[in-house]
Image 1 (cartoon, protein in one colour):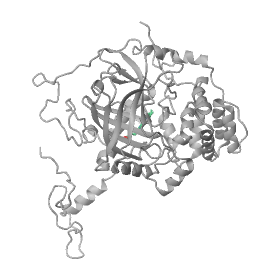
Image 2: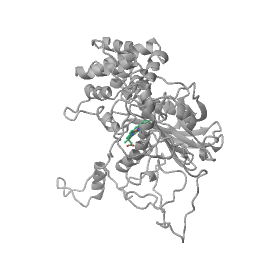
Image 3: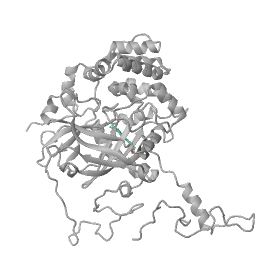
Image 4: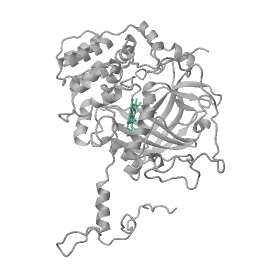
Length: 519
Ligand code: HEM
């Protein structure tokens, strides 16, 4: 099949229509006489306008504003005891990698220094297919019940009537859903305004499962730590940049790579056995909790370097389609319900945004050959030639078994009636936010948190919403809540009622997040 000519970086290419026919004058249109009407036969003119009319594709419903670049993932430590993924079977293995960073709530033209979590999406092209790590720059998240996600996101988008962003909607949601408070406190610390996109860490947040060649598995959390540290802006600095340079993050990433100051990260894993998970103080599938580093130390795995800017942003970054379900043998999703929901949501949104053959776009196509029974559809760039489109005995494909077989009986045998379930707030939900405030933060960090919160919560009109959010903060720590209350001129509020911790033990089995079946 003839390949499309690619721009070779030199000027002087012959100007053509989309079917390759040369055209002398790009601005001219065919008319009758000097002032006469245009002619339908002028393909050059129609071709130009018709393509222009279709230039926009839907922007991502979340994470619309972004920046990205290419580079590599290199394995630096042997973790074959943890996973049989071919990428990790030898120290020194390298895979071409693309990363897209993003803010979450704003439109694609919004300022990238906004207070918002940052997306940190990594596509690692391995010899067993693409492994996508679709991470954020925070180790926890706002929700653990996935149906809340669209509601929560809507509260950061525009009001249906005024078409304005609205602090009341945002805090109305958060104050009714107090499991968000851990992430809220990170978001309103200076970590909520990172200095650009490339000077920050990334976290899986979710618990994954790594499985080795013997079929032994462990729960895993992945941490991607910036080698130069997590650099942040103050609220004031970020606010100024929003006005003066809404593309600060895009620009600083591009320029760093152009100058040869390649951003790099060290990749670590935390691991937890099934036995440890059963004794863990928190639910291992609860995305609002971290795994304490002292009990679950970081183990180094590899490094990531970004050393190549895209030649064409739209083709290489905007069309990149990441999904937590793009996995390779030896790395699997856990039963975390938010993660399970995401496994569906991303390919679904890609089919809407990019079309059914989104995996065939050059930036998404695996570096290994793809052979299956999917055919046709819009933009089938690789329709697999004459290969049979059914499971043929005449020209069969070959099939490769996974190194491990079967499911784990203890954490993957599920019993119970199908029923609607929702997690409940309990005392344990406030322990880690309390430790963050009292132990991890110093006085400067606490002062910034309080003033950043006051700046936003102070703009809420509803007295009910304000008081309810202060009761969430009071459940974390009364002094913390009182400091925020004072900063917004509000009287002190008592903590909201939360179920006692022992109730959680019942919940832990009843809620169905971890179903442990003893053989
Ligand atoms: C139920 C929960 C969630 C749902 C339904 C959801 C859904 C989505 C959707 C629809 C997109 C747009 C994708 C596209 O158009 O290309 C997206 C982007 C993204 N999400 Fe989520 N999300 C959820 C939670 C999370 C969590 C917990 C994380 C991180 C730990 C995360 C990280 C990201 C990132 C990094 C992107 C941007 C990917 C890119 O750069 O193309 N999301 N999400």
